[in-house]
Amino acid sequence: MADIDDNTRIELEAAVYRRLVEHLRKRTDVQNIDLMNLAGFCRNCLANWMMDAAKEKGIAIDKDASREIVYGEPYKDWQAKHQKEASAEKLAAFEVNRPKEH
Image (cartoon, rainbow, N blue to C red; front, side, top):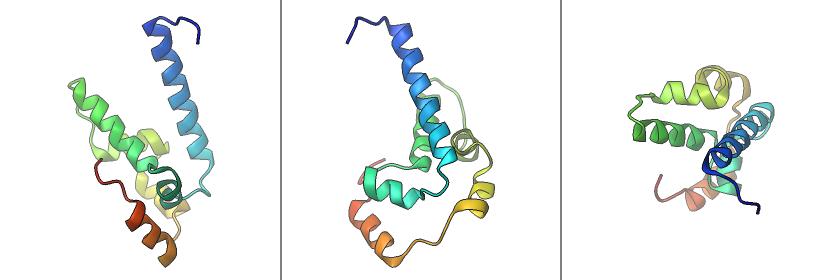
């Protein structure tokens, strides 16, 4: 990879994050449990990571605010519109694949 200064790298990383979040906002058909079972993270994980990053900078962002950043709307609204009941098979897979630490 070409030599990239820190500011440019940060800008590129931020652009990738924004693109990922926008992609997940459009793919409401992909449930969080599917993401967790396949990739080991989901939209809620991204929101938690946002809270962690904010905390490291001394910025207080609560769970609801961080989820709204990721979901593009209040989490309860997203859930009501898009979240489906997880099958017993998906829940069992989640228990096996659940991250041991956050």
